[in-house]
Image (tube, rainbow, N blue to C red; front, top):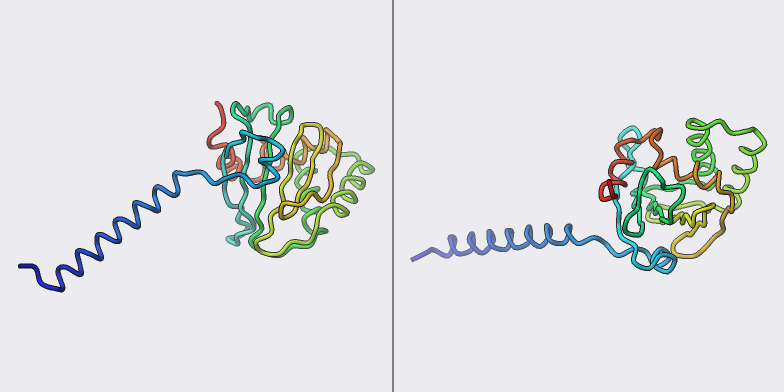
Length: 188
């Protein structure tokens, strides 16, 4: 006859196995898209997600949402949404400047154009706290920005849209591991 200790051990093991199985099943179920993404693109699906780390510090979690058949090589011609959930606080100015820095690292941008893009980004983007989400929707032909599910502005400049989203989706990105994670479930 099993002792009380054996029965408690078996019960704990059973609960552990059940919890691990539930966690594994929960991870196989993709999350629902944010409301702003679902409203703009009914039928969207999660293409991929990942975390940006900089010198070991977690900066944000990124998720790419698109309609079935999304082709990474033609991202500039397709509808999709990129959601960034920040894991620490940043000013709008810091986000805008870093975005432009990444664009200019990959592309030649005229000084007047760069100033316009920087000014527009600083005017549109908010300061963020840990847990805040900024979503960029690509219609294509520009960018529409959302903060915490509320539209905050946009830029109807196709060149900006392509270069901005190229920060994450372009082959010359400075974060190829994050790009691979974002494109994990894309059509090949």
